[in-house]
Image (cartoon, rainbow, N blue to C red; front, side, top):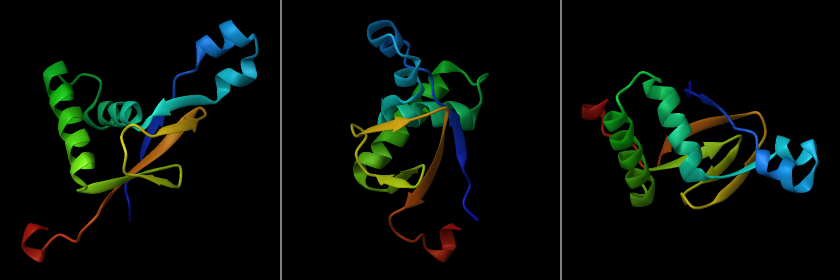
Length: 106
């Protein structure tokens, strides 16, 4: 079983103000790094201290850059934190290790 972190995606209010259409606000373009920050916040909780949140985001981004794991967002895999994904409402985020852990580490 794979754990899923469900993240609320903020509305793109700039698209409504500039384009005048609410339809554009429903689909929000985000960088994977921003979505990871939302996922970390969801995983550690909103009451976690800011320094813990920042350390967790930094370590998560470092692990992604090092190739320790890949990110799956709504069924699409990403390895680049600067990739852009368009989300609507919520996004399901999963983390997958790129290599098997030894039995001693489990």
